[in-house]
Length: 532
Image (cartoon, rainbow, N blue to C red; front, side, top):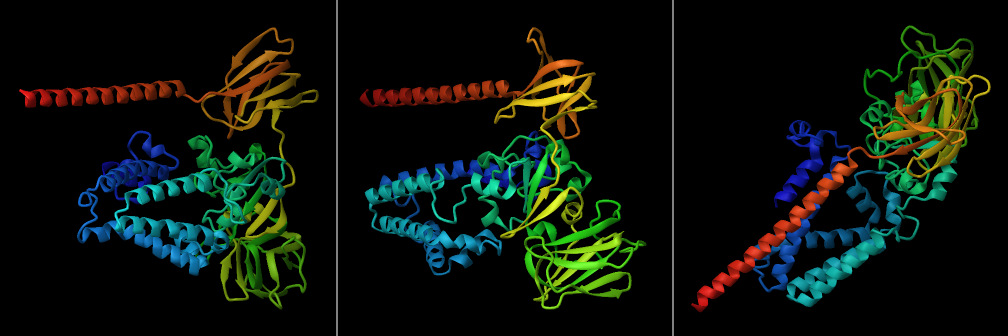
């Protein structure tokens, strides 16, 4: 019970009244995914289940709380499972949306009926076995459930269109393979589409490198700059500042929750600083929606457009739609009406002398009002981003230029950098020719534990050099000449951690053996006393 209680508190973390105290516990306050502490609860729950099952199989129903009114409490989870199974068979879409807490997860219900039927069958079998006190049947059902869980959920052998297994082919088709990728879905509204692209694991299973660190090592400094700590999160203002350029961010898939928000009275638009004047500004609806009216406003004290403005709606492929907008001035704002409510993916404002767009509010044909002035809107409307189109619930963008894997700074004529080898663990071998001392910058996030070896072209001499941060990425200083630089990573304190785990394991085995020896001695003593 103690493990269960501690596991729940640690997993909920800051969502509990104890959150402000837990933050000061060493290491715990810096844990990136506190919900993983639910494994502690799982361990305690498994121990309680084993104790309960042992009591049932040993014929101790009172100890297992299967007698009197207590049996209704004990069997309540099974009854709930039966009710959910029946509901999932009748209305899978409603159950899926209710359990996941998101209205956009209904497509997941397409392959849920067979899963609901199997779960319902297992729950009914448990109830029947417990009611009849059929111990062998109970063991058989438990083994069947364990086998099904292991095969279908732990090995990725779920088949059908609703599979959650990330697909490298689907990810490459959407993102390409020019550089790193990002999936921006802060409210996880596109779960059914983003998970097969690798949202939950990103580059772990798809093989495509990502700028988001979910499932990988990253420093707190990296998280603070990029805003990528939570699943599907991303700092649009960091993107606008160019923080991701050294990381070779080449493609972004964004859901509506990052592009459009519900209007808040007197809420200031997100500008990420001064709004520059550009030839055009584009605001994206997040997917395609029938748009009826758009209100576009400049920053305070600025002019929206120099020259005659033009407003067009863009379709899912980024092409202009017909008919054109009907424009009207409303104070300093510009109101664009779209006859017929075309299904648009974006709205583009342009003028011969440039535009300065801050606040944008769109009204859809069904009356829904959206604010299109989030940080992601500001960042994606500027260079180097190009709108590729809409894929399901995702708006896809590609960078017009991507940096190389490594470069020299400064880089005068005659310098050359070539990536010789790249390992899946981040290890890299880079060939460098420098006409003067320079800094070799590598598009890999800096983290304590990286080392670099500098070897001459004739391989006669080599030495270790310091790997230092260069913004978010890593760099080493190289002298004049031709060199081979090898980057490698060794997790800090890994050996100490392994030794500590070994000591703990030895202590656990030793204490277990000591308790067993003491128990046997006590039993022998009691037998001797009984004989005497």
